[in-house]
Image (cartoon, rainbow, N blue to C red; front, side, top):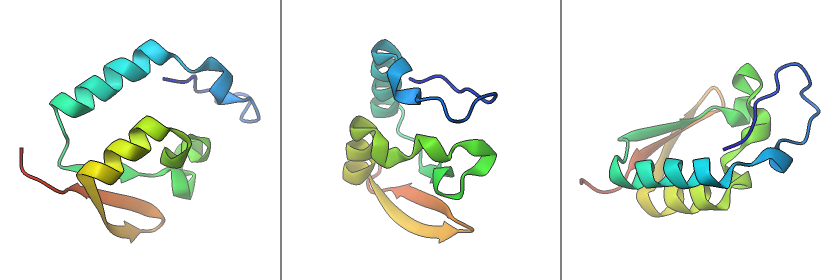
Length: 85
C-alpha cells in the first residue's frame, strides 16, 4: 500500500505506493467484504489525514459500488455494505 512515516508527516506518501500490496488488499476486500468501513482520515485521527479514500481510486470505486455512507460521527465516515453476500 503506502508507507506510514510518523516522524516526517510532510513526506510524499504516494511515491512509495506498493502496487502488489494494493492488489492483495483489493482481492481480500472482494473476497471478505466487511459489513462496515470506518474512514477516520477526514478527522486526521492518528495523523491518517493524508490517506483519504478519495486519493485511491480503486478503493474509492469499491466503496462507491458496494457501500452506503450511513453517517458521520465526529468526522468519522461510516459506510455500511449495500448487499448481503
